[in-house]
Image 1 (cartoon, rainbow, N blue to C red):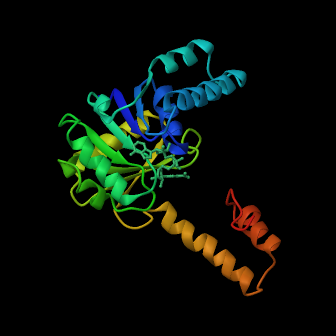
Image 2: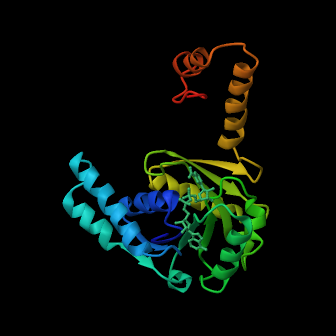
Length: 229
Ligand SMILES: NC(=O)c1ccc[n+]([C@@H]2O[C@H](COP(=O)([O-])OP(=O)(O)OC[C@H]3O[C@@H](n4cnc5c(N)ncnc54)[C@H](O)[C@@H]3O)[C@@H](O)[C@H]2O)c1
C-alpha cells in the first residue's frame, strides 16, 4: 500500500497534488526549498479547504484531518519513510537529476519515485536514481485537483509491474490514468502543440478570423478551450 506520499516542490503542481493525496486520506510530506515553505503551503491548502467547506464539498472535520496528515519538511532526509515520491520542482533537468541522485541516499528500496515533468525524458531523470527500475513519470495536469487525467510514463528502465501498481493507485485517487512511452510531450502535450500552432497558422495566413477559429474549435469542435483566446 502506498500510504505515505512525498512531494518535492510545493508550487502550483506540488500543492495541487498534495491536496489530491490528502483528500484520498494519504499522509503527505512536502519538501520545498523556498523560504517560509511551511507557512505558504499550509496557508494555501487551508484556504483551499475552506473554499471547499463553503461549497459543502468537504466538512470541517475532514479539513482538520487533511491538515493533520500534512507535514512540510525542511530537508530531503525527512522523506525517508515515503512509499511514493512525486517530484514537482521547477522544470530544470539538471536540478531534477540532482534531486533524484539525492533521493537515492534517502529512500527505502521499495519506494516508487516519480517525476511530474512535462517535457524531460523520464529515462534521463531516472538514470540519476540508485535503482532506475523504480522510476516513472506521473504527469498531472493543472489544476491537479480538478483535472482527472494523469499520464503514467514508463521509462526505458521502469519495472512494468510498477506501471500497473501506479495505474491502480491513481484509479483509487479517482483519477483517470493513461500510460504512455517516454517520448517528447507524452500524449497530451504532443497533441496540444499542433492544436495551438495550427490555429496560429490559420490566423497568420488570414484564412479565418481569430473569433471564427475559436468558435469553430470550442463550440463546434466541442473542445473546452479556444486555441487563441
Ligand atoms: N504548471 C503547470 O501547468 C504544469 C502542468 C503539468 C506539469 N508541470 C510540471 O510540474 C513541475 C512543477 O511545475 P510548477 O508549475 O508547480 O512549478 P512552480 O514554479 O509553481 O513550483 C516549483 C516549486 O519547486 C520548488 N523547488 C525548486 N527547487 C527545488 C528543490 N531542489 N527541492 C525542492 N523544491 C524545489 C520551488 O521553490 C517551487 O515552489 C515542473 O516539472 C512542470 O513542468 C507543470
